[in-house]
Image 1 (cartoon, rainbow, N blue to C red):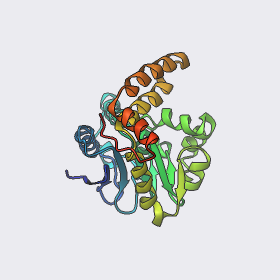
Image 2 (tube, helix red, strand yellow):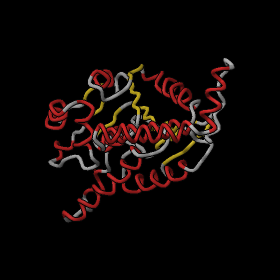
Image 3 (cartoon, helix red, strand yellow):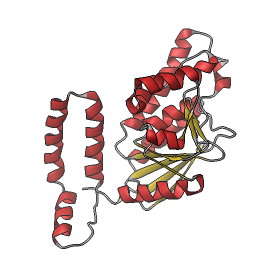
Image 4 (spheres, rainbow, N blue to C red):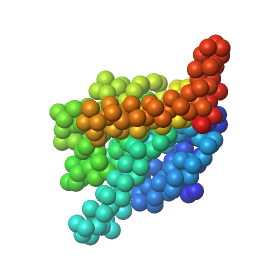
Length: 257
Protein backbone atom coordinates (compact mmCIF):
# COMPACT_ATOMS: atom_id res chain seq x y z
CA UNK A 1 0.00 0.00 0.00
CA UNK A 2 1.35 3.42 -1.01
CA UNK A 3 -1.17 5.72 0.65
CA UNK A 4 -2.46 3.73 3.63
CA UNK A 5 -1.01 1.87 6.57
CA UNK A 6 -3.05 -0.51 8.71
CA UNK A 7 -2.54 -1.65 12.29
CA UNK A 8 -4.89 -4.29 13.70
CA UNK A 9 -5.27 -4.77 17.43
CA UNK A 10 -8.15 -6.38 19.31
CA UNK A 11 -10.40 -6.76 16.25
CA UNK A 12 -9.95 -3.04 15.40
CA UNK A 13 -8.07 -2.06 12.24
CA UNK A 14 -6.70 1.48 12.43
CA UNK A 15 -6.31 2.70 8.84
CA UNK A 16 -4.12 5.79 8.39
CA UNK A 17 -4.18 7.92 5.23
CA UNK A 18 -0.67 9.01 4.21
CA UNK A 19 -0.78 11.48 1.34
CA UNK A 20 0.98 14.66 2.49
CA UNK A 21 0.66 17.52 2.77
CA UNK A 22 -3.16 17.59 2.78
CA UNK A 23 -4.17 13.92 2.39
CA UNK A 24 -5.87 14.81 -0.88
CA UNK A 25 -8.17 12.16 -2.32
CA UNK A 26 -6.64 11.55 -5.72
CA UNK A 27 -7.98 8.82 -7.99
CA UNK A 28 -5.05 6.63 -6.95
CA UNK A 29 -5.83 7.16 -3.24
CA UNK A 30 -9.50 6.26 -3.72
CA UNK A 31 -8.62 3.18 -5.77
CA UNK A 32 -6.21 1.96 -3.11
CA UNK A 33 -8.78 2.60 -0.37
CA UNK A 34 -11.33 0.51 -2.26
CA UNK A 35 -8.83 -2.35 -2.59
CA UNK A 36 -7.94 -2.12 1.09
CA UNK A 37 -11.60 -2.30 2.10
CA UNK A 38 -12.05 -5.44 -0.01
CA UNK A 39 -9.20 -7.06 1.93
CA UNK A 40 -10.51 -5.98 5.33
CA UNK A 41 -14.03 -7.18 4.53
CA UNK A 42 -12.87 -10.80 4.41
CA UNK A 43 -10.42 -10.54 7.33
CA UNK A 44 -11.96 -12.30 10.35
CA UNK A 45 -9.47 -10.56 12.62
CA UNK A 46 -11.10 -7.21 11.79
CA UNK A 47 -14.52 -6.33 13.14
CA UNK A 48 -14.29 -2.50 13.20
CA UNK A 49 -12.31 -0.03 11.07
CA UNK A 50 -11.00 3.28 12.40
CA UNK A 51 -10.09 5.71 9.62
CA UNK A 52 -7.95 8.79 10.23
CA UNK A 53 -5.43 10.98 8.47
CA UNK A 54 -1.74 11.25 9.34
CA UNK A 55 -0.28 14.73 9.64
CA UNK A 56 -2.21 18.00 9.89
CA UNK A 57 -5.51 16.93 8.31
CA UNK A 58 -8.04 14.14 8.06
CA UNK A 59 -8.34 15.11 4.40
CA UNK A 60 -8.47 18.60 2.91
CA UNK A 61 -10.34 17.42 -0.19
CA UNK A 62 -9.95 16.04 -3.68
CA UNK A 63 -6.72 16.43 -5.62
CA UNK A 64 -7.25 19.80 -7.34
CA UNK A 65 -4.17 19.35 -9.54
CA UNK A 66 -5.82 16.25 -10.97
CA UNK A 67 -8.74 18.41 -12.12
CA UNK A 68 -6.50 20.23 -14.60
CA UNK A 69 -6.15 17.02 -16.64
CA UNK A 70 -9.94 16.68 -17.04
CA UNK A 71 -10.94 18.17 -20.39
CA UNK A 72 -14.51 16.99 -21.03
CA UNK A 73 -17.82 16.73 -19.24
CA UNK A 74 -17.70 12.95 -19.73
CA UNK A 75 -14.35 12.72 -17.97
CA UNK A 76 -15.58 14.93 -15.15
CA UNK A 77 -18.74 12.87 -14.70
CA UNK A 78 -16.70 9.64 -14.65
CA UNK A 79 -14.38 11.16 -12.01
CA UNK A 80 -17.43 11.89 -9.86
CA UNK A 81 -18.93 8.42 -10.39
CA UNK A 82 -15.67 6.73 -9.41
CA UNK A 83 -15.56 8.67 -6.15
CA UNK A 84 -19.24 8.01 -5.48
CA UNK A 85 -18.69 4.27 -5.85
CA UNK A 86 -16.01 4.28 -3.14
CA UNK A 87 -18.23 6.33 -0.80
CA UNK A 88 -21.08 3.90 -1.41
CA UNK A 89 -18.73 0.98 -0.73
CA UNK A 90 -17.96 2.54 2.66
CA UNK A 91 -21.58 3.29 3.55
CA UNK A 92 -22.67 -0.25 2.58
CA UNK A 93 -19.67 -1.89 4.24
CA UNK A 94 -20.68 -4.84 6.49
CA UNK A 95 -18.34 -3.75 9.29
CA UNK A 96 -18.53 -0.42 11.16
CA UNK A 97 -16.23 2.32 9.89
CA UNK A 98 -15.46 5.17 12.28
CA UNK A 99 -13.89 8.39 11.02
CA UNK A 100 -11.61 10.19 13.50
CA UNK A 101 -11.41 13.75 12.14
CA UNK A 102 -8.80 16.33 13.07
CA UNK A 103 -7.51 19.42 11.30
CA UNK A 104 -9.86 19.57 8.37
CA UNK A 105 -12.36 17.45 6.46
CA UNK A 106 -13.16 19.59 3.46
CA UNK A 107 -14.71 18.82 0.09
CA UNK A 108 -13.95 15.23 -0.77
CA UNK A 109 -12.56 14.79 2.74
CA UNK A 110 -15.95 15.59 4.27
CA UNK A 111 -17.66 13.41 1.66
CA UNK A 112 -15.40 10.55 2.77
CA UNK A 113 -16.20 11.22 6.43
CA UNK A 114 -19.95 11.41 5.76
CA UNK A 115 -19.92 7.98 4.13
CA UNK A 116 -18.50 6.47 7.34
CA UNK A 117 -20.96 5.14 9.89
CA UNK A 118 -19.74 7.22 12.86
CA UNK A 119 -17.74 10.46 13.06
CA UNK A 120 -15.65 11.51 16.07
CA UNK A 121 -14.20 15.01 15.62
CA UNK A 122 -11.66 17.25 17.24
CA UNK A 123 -13.40 20.30 18.70
CA UNK A 124 -11.31 22.63 16.54
CA UNK A 125 -11.57 20.64 13.30
CA UNK A 126 -13.01 22.34 10.21
CA UNK A 127 -15.71 20.55 8.20
CA UNK A 128 -17.18 21.90 4.99
CA UNK A 129 -17.93 21.62 1.29
CA UNK A 130 -16.16 24.64 -0.26
CA UNK A 131 -16.34 23.47 -3.89
CA UNK A 132 -18.44 26.43 -5.03
CA UNK A 133 -15.47 28.66 -4.21
CA UNK A 134 -13.79 26.96 -7.22
CA UNK A 135 -16.84 27.34 -9.44
CA UNK A 136 -17.67 23.64 -9.22
CA UNK A 137 -19.95 21.51 -7.03
CA UNK A 138 -19.41 18.50 -4.76
CA UNK A 139 -19.16 15.31 -6.79
CA UNK A 140 -18.76 12.43 -4.35
CA UNK A 141 -22.42 12.51 -3.17
CA UNK A 142 -21.84 15.41 -0.79
CA UNK A 143 -24.95 17.25 -1.98
CA UNK A 144 -27.02 14.21 -0.94
CA UNK A 145 -25.37 13.12 2.29
CA UNK A 146 -24.90 16.54 3.91
CA UNK A 147 -28.66 17.38 4.01
CA UNK A 148 -29.31 14.01 5.63
CA UNK A 149 -27.29 15.10 8.63
CA UNK A 150 -27.77 18.88 8.91
CA UNK A 151 -30.97 19.52 6.95
CA UNK A 152 -31.33 21.18 3.56
CA UNK A 153 -31.17 24.75 4.88
CA UNK A 154 -27.85 24.35 6.68
CA UNK A 155 -26.45 22.25 3.80
CA UNK A 156 -27.34 25.04 1.38
CA UNK A 157 -25.66 27.64 3.61
CA UNK A 158 -22.49 25.56 3.97
CA UNK A 159 -22.20 24.95 0.22
CA UNK A 160 -23.23 28.42 -0.96
CA UNK A 161 -20.94 30.31 1.43
CA UNK A 162 -18.09 27.75 1.31
CA UNK A 163 -17.66 28.41 5.03
CA UNK A 164 -16.78 25.40 7.21
CA UNK A 165 -18.12 24.63 10.65
CA UNK A 166 -16.09 23.52 13.66
CA UNK A 167 -16.11 20.05 15.14
CA UNK A 168 -18.15 21.33 18.08
CA UNK A 169 -20.72 22.85 15.69
CA UNK A 170 -20.76 19.62 13.67
CA UNK A 171 -22.02 17.75 16.73
CA UNK A 172 -24.67 20.40 17.35
CA UNK A 173 -25.91 20.03 13.76
CA UNK A 174 -25.88 16.21 13.82
CA UNK A 175 -22.95 15.87 11.44
CA UNK A 176 -20.72 14.21 14.05
CA UNK A 177 -21.34 11.97 17.06
CA UNK A 178 -19.06 13.71 19.52
CA UNK A 179 -16.34 16.34 19.71
CA UNK A 180 -13.26 16.04 21.91
CA UNK A 181 -9.98 17.94 22.36
CA UNK A 182 -7.68 17.05 19.47
CA UNK A 183 -5.10 15.39 21.73
CA UNK A 184 -7.80 12.96 22.94
CA UNK A 185 -9.27 12.20 19.51
CA UNK A 186 -7.62 8.89 18.65
CA UNK A 187 -7.89 7.55 22.19
CA UNK A 188 -11.61 8.38 22.27
CA UNK A 189 -12.20 6.84 18.84
CA UNK A 190 -10.28 3.68 19.72
CA UNK A 191 -12.23 3.27 22.96
CA UNK A 192 -15.48 3.45 21.01
CA UNK A 193 -14.18 1.08 18.33
CA UNK A 194 -13.14 -1.48 20.96
CA UNK A 195 -16.58 -1.37 22.59
CA UNK A 196 -18.23 -2.07 19.23
CA UNK A 197 -15.73 -4.83 18.43
CA UNK A 198 -16.90 -6.79 21.49
CA UNK A 199 -20.35 -7.27 19.93
CA UNK A 200 -21.28 -10.16 17.64
CA UNK A 201 -20.18 -9.48 14.05
CA UNK A 202 -23.42 -11.11 12.94
CA UNK A 203 -25.65 -8.70 14.84
CA UNK A 204 -23.47 -5.74 13.84
CA UNK A 205 -23.77 -6.70 10.17
CA UNK A 206 -27.53 -7.04 10.47
CA UNK A 207 -27.96 -3.64 12.11
CA UNK A 208 -25.78 -2.06 9.41
CA UNK A 209 -28.05 -3.57 6.77
CA UNK A 210 -31.09 -2.24 8.59
CA UNK A 211 -29.64 1.26 9.02
CA UNK A 212 -29.13 1.38 5.27
CA UNK A 213 -32.61 -0.04 4.71
CA UNK A 214 -34.02 2.89 6.70
CA UNK A 215 -32.59 5.22 4.02
CA UNK A 216 -33.61 3.15 1.01
CA UNK A 217 -36.90 1.40 1.83
CA UNK A 218 -40.29 2.50 3.04
CA UNK A 219 -40.93 2.15 6.77
CA UNK A 220 -43.09 -0.95 6.37
CA UNK A 221 -40.64 -2.61 3.96
CA UNK A 222 -37.79 -1.96 6.38
CA UNK A 223 -39.79 -3.31 9.32
CA UNK A 224 -40.51 -6.54 7.43
CA UNK A 225 -36.81 -6.78 6.60
CA UNK A 226 -36.02 -6.33 10.30
CA UNK A 227 -38.20 -9.32 11.21
CA UNK A 228 -36.45 -11.43 8.56
CA UNK A 229 -32.99 -10.53 9.86
CA UNK A 230 -34.13 -10.99 13.48
CA UNK A 231 -34.95 -14.59 12.61
CA UNK A 232 -31.57 -15.10 10.95
CA UNK A 233 -29.59 -13.61 13.84
CA UNK A 234 -31.69 -15.27 16.55
CA UNK A 235 -30.68 -18.74 15.36
CA UNK A 236 -26.95 -17.99 15.23
CA UNK A 237 -24.39 -19.49 17.61
CA UNK A 238 -23.54 -15.98 18.79
CA UNK A 239 -27.14 -15.42 19.86
CA UNK A 240 -27.10 -18.64 21.86
CA UNK A 241 -23.81 -17.60 23.46
CA UNK A 242 -25.17 -14.15 24.29
CA UNK A 243 -28.28 -15.51 25.99
CA UNK A 244 -26.30 -18.14 27.90
CA UNK A 245 -23.74 -15.55 29.02
CA UNK A 246 -26.57 -13.35 30.32
CA UNK A 247 -28.03 -16.25 32.30
CA UNK A 248 -24.59 -17.13 33.69
CA UNK A 249 -23.84 -13.46 34.46
CA UNK A 250 -20.63 -13.36 32.44
CA UNK A 251 -19.36 -11.47 29.39
CA UNK A 252 -20.21 -13.17 26.08
CA UNK A 253 -17.45 -14.43 23.81
CA UNK A 254 -18.77 -13.96 20.28
CA UNK A 255 -17.18 -15.91 17.44
CA UNK A 256 -19.04 -14.47 14.48
CA UNK A 257 -20.95 -17.71 13.85
